Structures are given as C-alpha cells and as structure tokens.
Length: 415
View 1 (cartoon, rainbow, N blue to C red):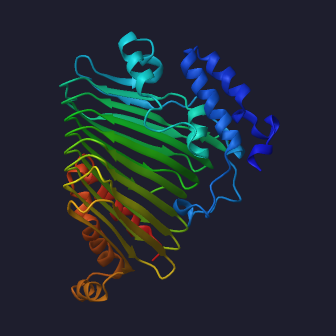
View 2 (cartoon, one colour; view 1 turned 120 degrees about the vertical axis):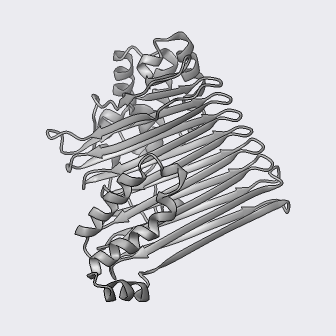
View 3 (cartoon, rainbow, N blue to C red; view 1 turned 60 degrees about the vertical axis):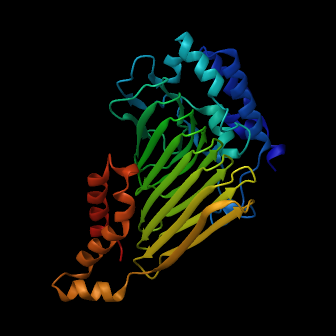
C-alpha cells in the first residue's frame, strides 16, 4: 500500500531529500513548500490501476516510479526571441526577474494541481530545468519558441526526467512553442506537466514532436485554461518510445474561446500509445475540435478515451471529436471510446466518431496493380490517412518533416 511506504522505499522521492534539493537550488519558500506538498502527495497516492477508466488499457501494476532515479542535472534547452516585456527561458532565470517571478508564482500549479495524481505529484516534487514562456499583452513572438528535451544518460540505466513548462499568454498575445522530445535507448521514465494560461483573445500553439528512444515511458499531462475569445491549439506527434500516455485537456471557460487538439501515432513492434482528451466547455459560444489518428504495425496498440463536456453555462457551443485507427498488421490493436456529456439543450452541434479497421483492400490492390509493391502502397495510403492532421495549421511548422519521418518508419515497419 502506498500509505505504508517508508522513506527508504521512496528514496529520492521522499519529502526530506526533495526539500533539501530545493533548498540547495536556492528556490523561494513558496516553491519549496509546493515541492514538499508534491512529495507528500506522491507518498500517499497509489499507482493508477485499470479500475480507473482513463487507465483501463494501460496496466502499470508491475511497475513503480521509485525504480527510476531522477536526473538532477536534466534541463531542456530553450531558444527564442521574445517580444519586449516577454520571456522564454528557464523558470530559474525567470525567478531572478521581479516581474517574471511574480507571474510564475501566480500561475505555476494553478492549472494542474500538484496533488491530483501519482505522476503529477512526482513532477511537482522533482522537476528541474523548468521552462517559462510569457507572452506580454499584445505581444507576438515572431518565431516559434523551441524547447529541446533530451533525456537519458549512458551511465544511468534507469533514469527519470520531469519536464515542466508553464505558458502564460496575456490578452491579445500570440506564441507558438515546439517541444522536441528525444532520448537514448536506455530505460527512461518521463513524467511531464504542461500548463497553459490563455487570457482574453490570446493565441497559443504547442506542438509536441515525440521521437523518444525505444525504451522510454512517457506520462504527460497537458492542460490549458481558456479565457474569453482565446484560441489554444495542441498538436502531438508520437513516433518513438515504448509507452506513451498523454492527457490533453482544455478548460474552456471564456465566451467564444476555441480549443483544438490534433494527434498522430505511428506504431510498430510492441509500442503502446494511450491518449486521453478532455474538452470542458463552460463559456458560452465556445468551440472545440479533436482529431486523433493512429496507424499501427507489428503488435503495437493505440488507446483513446475522450470526453467532450458541455456545461449548463455553455449555451450556443459547438464541439467535435474523432478518433481513427488504421491497422497495418493483424497483430495490431486499437481501442476507442469517445464520450459526449451534453448538459444543456442549447448547442450548435456536438458530434463524435471512431473507427478501427485494416487498410482498404481495394485501395491497396489498385496501387499494387499500378506497379507498386505492398510496402510502397502502404506508404501512400498511410500518408493519405494522416494528411488531414499533418496538413492542419496546428502542424504547419513541421508538416514536411513529419511526413518524411512517417514514410521512413513505414519503410522499416513489421507489416
């Protein structure tokens, strides 16, 4: 039982070493207290089980976070040219600037509470090299902010990293962020938390370019809070890694706010992808759209569980949710469960759909009859299957590179 774990069982995740490490980094008192609260929540919270609906198809009963040693030297590399009054860099640097420090203190942990789950609590206690992106009122980042996340070291066979990114977009601002996830092939645990605070009429785009090493396990929570007229677009490309589980959620509080989520997963061997999405409409005339697609070779697996909720306060809203899965092998598997919770009769349109099936045999036969071998035909068909997502504006920064990498993986996949 988690509540019976001793300090020795918890190791580096226990409250005392967490507090000591924070003090050693000269962090402010409020942040040290936040880390200590995360450590206590971590000790008291059990690992999720398949009895919890979002974890139904991802069983971690034989695993423990404590097996993975936190990498205290981990720090993403941030590149940006921020507008006047803005900031893009480490949270440590932001805390040395009085104006930015106040913004960090006000927003960090305000969207994702550090006590809400085992993985989030681990992040709250352990994150290092956190990233802060602040788009000032009316400010526009001329080029995307890039965040390079490189995890794993050759001398640490069971390491853990805890990416933490906080985005605050003031009124009428605009920023695009590209997060590039890479790692070695040694076992690595990644527990990430991304918080987005979008003020009135702001525009935020975040693109996750996921190409982890073969033994990386990723558990990430991405949550945005949208004010009136704001627009937040989240796009995720999942190609690498052994297991990837992403919770991508939007709290659509403001009138006329819009949330968009796009995702692509391309699996092979025994890869496991698990997406959970939440679009919670609270503001009037708000809109949302979710599209997650997976193409699966080998014995890979895709799981999708999505909830679109329209509250009684969200009259005049519109929402759509789609999950499509293409099976390239008879050993691949996909499970899909899109859910609508409509609590008001005053909606414009709310729809959802899901499909799981093999490649269209007639389309495959047609391409082969034109001289293509089966693998070449599948390259074209998978490229076409992903086209609606890759060509979406949310992916425009990496669209060409993404299609090329999809083609390369299909060329070597177990079909």
